[in-house]
Length: 221
Length: 221
Image 1 (cartoon, rainbow over the protein chains, first blue to last red):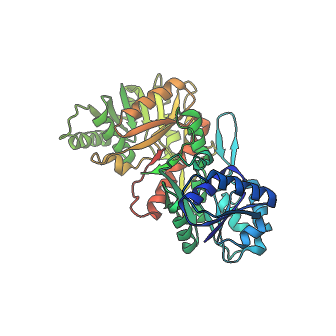
Image 2: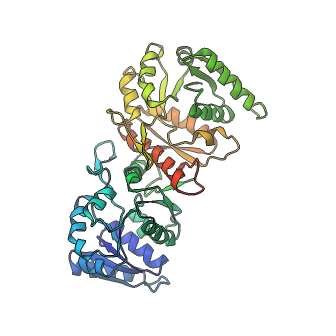
Image 3: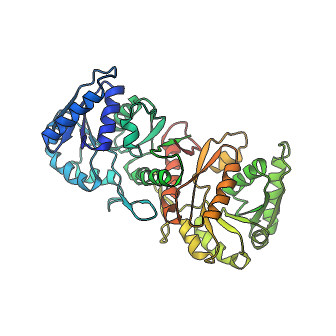
């Protein structure tokens, strides 16, 4: 099982790459528009894992090549780019599952606010732009990139899964559950993605206004 | 300190009344449009507390009378009625703090969806309809009424506080923190209420789609 992390050079991509490398036996490919950037990030992540007991295979590749070799494609890309990226890789998509942790937000003096695209959510935007036979799953929202990347930090958090394809959802739930301290919960079909995505500005607002809550995540009890 | 629970005959009102009675020394007035309904509910709650070690004073009154005697007024009222209720008690409001756990939701086959009023959130709707010198605080959203009312159920949950008046927020945070197993976190000013309210449809969707998660609440870790 190979996981491509497009935008894997960014902060949430880094965090997911490191956790997947340490806690799972998935092969990881960092994807970027520039091969050299992807390869540099892959080497850096490998060196950060040097003193961990992992045989993780992390390589870097151009987006198209990364998608081509992957079973699961995680779109760790800013939401305003992600639609175009999905269209740019459409011809490489075959049996892969597309996964998005993307959230549309807007900030003002008071805090961050949920700001979905016209499709209702970023997850549904991706489903609209992807070929119709490619399953899209929303997952890994609401996780602090810093906390994921700090491998000494225990997670004890939940991540919510949304999607319309039960098999694809099961596979992403399994992947998420393999990350130690992360529990995947089902929040229903793609149509329920907005309520999942809107937790991200909320946790950032809590981190800002409540003392000692930086990099906070969510758990459902 | 006296807490009036308008709509205290409903399910979330019942849950809050019982928890406040058991865990705090606040005087509790159940408010309703019909005095007799309020008094019946108050007697019923008292009898449910008969074998608990509490001297809680719970009485029933018409809304206006309940508000008049209260320091804190919790609007445990369906969101489509709450604006009118606020206007109907406006002349009784003086030094009280208005508290709302209200959330606008709409359901379809997929699940529940956040459906705020034009003001952006129910909390902001109430602030708009209340006299301008009355502080409004959003709190006690996202809590299962059944779980609150089941006093044998341990909470271990968070509730999020939003508001523009720091003193009023502090008082409501203190009230929430007095409920055993509930921790109040600050999510910022009223403008951040939508992100807090939208967790309610989310937890209901999780309860529907994830096994063993009925009456689930939220904790920020």
